[in-house]
Image (tube, each protein chain N blue to C red):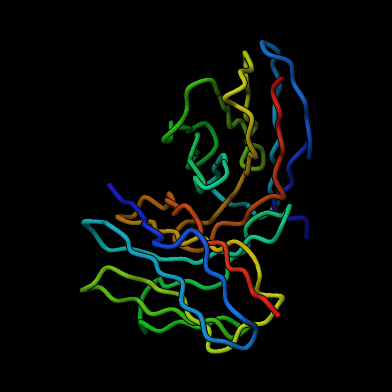
Length: 113
Length: 111
């Protein structure tokens, strides 16, 4: 069975400060890892993904995440956040060829001016 | 390119009524999913399908039914609505190992 733990339900931060949203997963087989973002009253959109290869993956808007197999983590980071980054962020895992994503509970990123 | 389309966007049901949430995708994806989202609980998988004619239960299937007669459509049926089914429902599709594409959601209130 696979599971995802997002350790923080809410992360407040000031604009232009760095941020890290934490995600740990549990799976006994190889995994695919995803971060999705959800803006108010919208569906989820893919932010970035790890399928294989380089363990550091980046998004087009400055976010990055690193797959750490030994620590079973896939933390999301951004060196300098903007007001427009305020949203709900979900970590997801699918594994073992099942292609059925399991989602964490989400982390609300709140960027203050 | 429409992607994943869900209808309706909003609905209020009385206890005991039934309804069907519609979901259509135009990306020829084999995998389709229904999730419900409740505050602070993330997304819970209700049902999923790996292709036309094949469906299976997810984590929270009770009170729901699905069918998949075509690749494009994956409707979710609520037979006897209960207040516990008040939620936001998301349909998604994927080609497999890659990303899932989500619809805009259906906000359902059962009173």
